[in-house]
Image 1 (cartoon, rainbow, N blue to C red):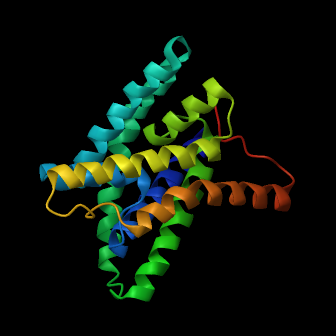
Image 2: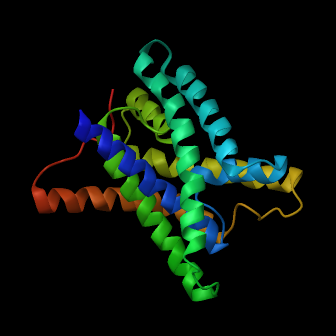
Length: 215
């Protein structure tokens, strides 16, 4: 159990670093945090607080999707909301303390670093089967109901998040591309794909499969 908790917390922190690198790139944040970042900009609140609010809403969406199949253990995701919100603030502090140069080539590299870290974080923390982040919890809920592939649903989910975040900034913020930009679009399609490749590589190296979807 201790090992699972450690993997869970480590995976969440890796994901938060991915979010921080995406924000630092200035090419748009990642899909998983695009709505939280848009909410922070539009409402003028801390991104950690915005992350907690948005992720809490996603837990209620899971209740609707799963209905009677929603297990009480999933309520632990409310704790995840606060943990991930805190990690996001810490990761932003770390990334901006690195004094990474702000130029086109570096920012493009940061986008792909962000994509890899988010996919890797999901790969590490989801199999721990403690409680997913609400974003992955929504994807997992749809996977359980439909029996579709997690990585494919992840791509559709991320694309939807990007569209909603863009509309939020269009109608409620001065810059329509403040949270959504080319990096966000790239991430929407590549995080799920990268997750799939990491799982395949793990299987190739160890001969074992990792079950990302948990009941």
